[in-house]
Length: 311
Image (tube, rainbow, N blue to C red):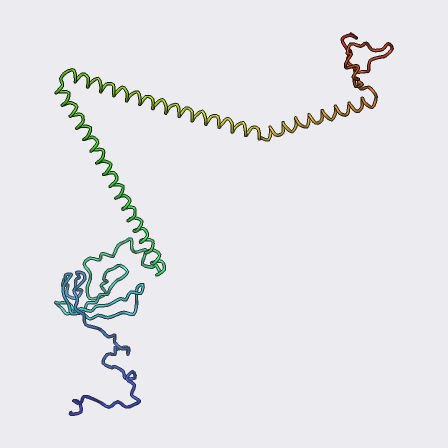
């Protein structure tokens, strides 16, 4: 018995502590039992024990055992907790649920209310990690956009409030001015009141004349705009008509007819010149004496126009 109380023991050089099996912590299937650490916690949700029907409220303290699972969600560790019912000592286990930001009850009890359970979330049960990341990025972008939109709406509300305050201040100034005018009028008497009324009538007439002038100017501008639009439409129509296929064909036919007529005239002139029937060019003396009679026995050239003296 004395050797049990010594402080040091002998370890041979070939001692391997990893080769020693911990039989106390082995399960029935031969696998070593997972190491559990003690943890003091409060129940994160209200539950009902399935063994005895005891209701366990949220926030009750327990000495639990914590187990770190091998599975992870987006590199986030998942933990399992073991507690016992306060009435029947039945074992209750629940685990963390980082996907929904909540806890999931596994066995031994049933949750009274599950916040994360919603019919709209059933479509996300079979999605992969990449799809989950894409969805979360889209949701984050939508939240950021909604936040920016809320900021813009808040800024617009502030601008509208300031504009409303300015309008109220202007209305108050106008009311104060009118009250002061009325007080001065009452102090001066009836003549001053008539003068004030006449002044207001003149100001109203000036405002009406100015408004009518602005209306006439707006009508004139609208009329000129319509006129310019009509002129532009007519110009576009003329341009399209000028460059249409029919107009191009007519111009081509006209030019071809002119070239053909000019060619025929040239051919006729050459033929007449070859036959000697062309009119001789007048000499300078003939130009100086246009009234000279032709010599006797000479005939005018064929096709030549007789002078007034010959007629």
